[in-house]
Image (cartoon, rainbow, N blue to C red; front, side, top):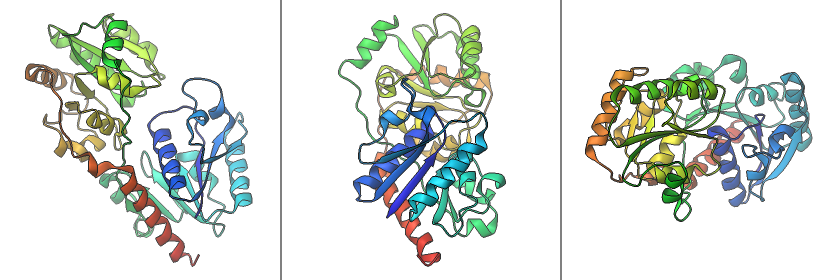
Amino acid sequence: MRIVHLLLTSRFAGTERHVLELAAAQAANGHDVTLVLRHKAAQSRPDAIAHRVDPRVKVELVADWLFRWPARRDAARLVRRLRPDVAHAHLGSACRALHGLGGVCLRVATLHIAYKPHHHDGLDGLIAIAPWQLPTIPAPLRAHSTQINNWTVPRPPADGARERIRALYGIAPDEFLFGALGRVESSKGFDVLVDAFARVAIPGARLAIVGQGKAWESLRRQAPPEVVMPGFADRPEDWLAAFDCFVSPSRFEPFGLVLLEAMQAGLPVVASASEGARHLAPYFEQPLVPVGDADALADALVAMHARGRRRCEYPMSHFRIEAKCAEVEAFYREGLARLGR
């Protein structure tokens, strides 16, 4: 198949990892895969996107504009020129770029966040990443949609990563390190985590919040100096190796790819009852805590610390990219057959 993925963001995070991994897996399966990015995504900076793309995946760049609609227009023109079998959009601007391309190709989108009529209506099919999303899709479109779990690609940490990171940030080998990863913004609930951690002041415990975002400065002011906040990490797997427990305090988390990464690292998990965490809760030994409840989160941190440092075993075969990529490709084929292609 000729497949075009549209991703009109500029900074690397969970959605971007999902798209690059899917594109690489499809290229490895012998498909002709192109990724459409903005020029800003190809800048020389640690959190850019283009330098991470698998060499088997072709990259096409569209110009950055002051407003979003010219980039959508240019992306639509590019899809018309490429004439793929499938155009697969990721996030709002990319979805809207496909609105006027009915009949050109199969137009699908992944619900990385939630169904939004002005983004997704008029497309040929949707992929939900979690079961809670399917009932939110109108029945006519839901009939041509499916749910496919997120996946994780195993990434071993660098040799000595745990010791190196702890030494760099003054975390003693015997200190218990709670850790969180993600974009630092309100939806991630890191302010609740800082509040919860400060309330209990667990002896011999530290907290690290790894990531960058709009709320980083305000969170840094809120957090005590001993809370480690290194900003964006190009190798999150090294930080996961340094953690003793992973914490997801999100107010909203559609699936939580980072939860899978923590599971892959064998970390025990403390999580708020966000949408994605509820989907994965059967795998966790610690019950979920109410969203936004600092007292309940503090109690969960104390309970997890009392259990001591250990590694957990999770059935990660349920979240292998090979199987999930096959499901995505089967969804494409069903859509193409429905359109008579």
